[in-house]
Length: 362
Image (tube, rainbow, N blue to C red):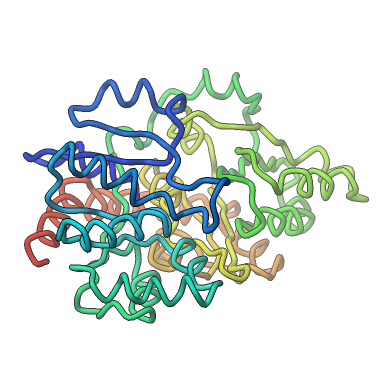
């Protein structure tokens, strides 16, 4: 969940953000905000441990901006900074977790020990799913002090009925085809290789199907090799890599898709903490299919807004895809149910109310 999405919607009060995102990636965004944003690396390659420098950056900003409360999110460097600020300035803090981050912190015994110390002194915690909440609780943060606040979706931006001609032309998406869509950072846990493995069975039933993979990442070479080495030329014709997708194009791509797929699985500590993309696709009236792992079962109501599948079983995935492609009424019903759910449960007004209520309880 992006803290900026919450901060800019808060009714009053001042916020200060320290982020490790590079300045050149956020200069235009920063200028549009009504609160100060400091961008600098919270880790360094010149010292070990590399996160040791984060409290110094945070302390300088906390003194300058007269900070009263700290939110620590996105990794151990922010956790450490919040903990040190409490020790030095007495500032209360709460910790955020998203799934992958909290599991990654448990790889090292030393980090696990420090996280337990930090959690012990935290005013509370915020998790993006019940799955993440359980992981936080295992590290010592009392369950009653952890609030689950799901990501929000702008139902006005992500909606059905958007004009798609320009995006169809930009990404070379043909008409009169069944469109399967995956958009994400290309990493192994996303399960896009499972979709490729399921394609022969899907194409046998629906030969006019095309699978579009949007995004860049370290798994791209492996995925491309799977397609290129396939003995079935139909697979090579059916899989299209469209590269990095701009945020502005996402709602229209969801509108073009018959099904959005991300059959994620857990690989060691790498896990999907929730799966906001499923909500975005649902908000556009698109049915979704996700892997039964991590927090995804909280993002998809199986059999109602989409399907959950075994992320290691291509036959299961192929069966569910064929079921949706072959039943237009079911596909439409799931897409409509998904949008109703997003508007009712994941609108930003509700998210902000939950966030403010959490602050008052801490």
